[in-house]
Length: 278
Image 1: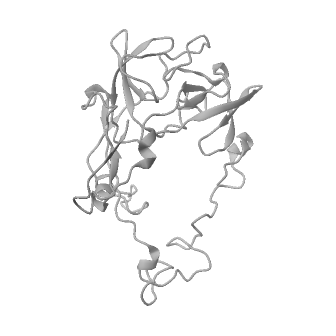
Image 2 (image 1 turned 90 degrees about the horizontal axis):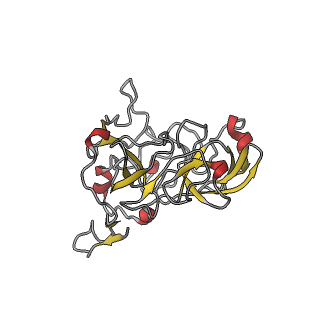
Image 3 (image 1 turned 60 degrees about the horizontal axis):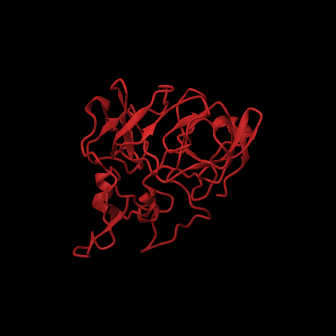
């Protein structure tokens, strides 16, 4: 896992930084684990744009990931590390003794030939890729792909380079420090996977040119101040004018840029021990 830089032979390559994909061992996905992925272009079922600046991009197929890890006490061998266009992390192709193959999220240090297991017991080796209940994992251990409801499969800490940490255990709950610095109570019977997520250099990538964003399905994000008054509250004025509003707002007049949008009485507030810093 490393980064690749280019000589500035063109303006687009001058600052471009991409992954060298050195950890990828298989270039074509497992056909049986693919599903069609239809794009919406940011539009809802009525055909109206509900998410601006989305559309286009390279065609993709969805890789079916086993977030539940519900084949209990079955040892699987890592067959390949693959690229997934639908997420920032890498994925690992594993194969069980009966020949069944699955995709899992690839943690750091997981390599081809390693064995992983999913269990409810605590007597397995605490090595990357093994999945077990939070109550069986020692304090301070880095974990990812964490369940919020037992049996629902991992829902949080799935991005490249991220990891959570078990800070304490109290009764039926464990205090888990999330990548946002928030400390949250999670049931000890919820399961998680050992290790930090791989592809840690993902946050160091530099797109370099607008075309590469287009390949990813991201259109140009137009500033409100560059629009007409009819199109945005910040629009209009002579030349490069300031926004004009006392506080920055969305095209529909709602405050933005730092405005808190979380509900004041959200159901999960009782699980938050310490809020995130920002």
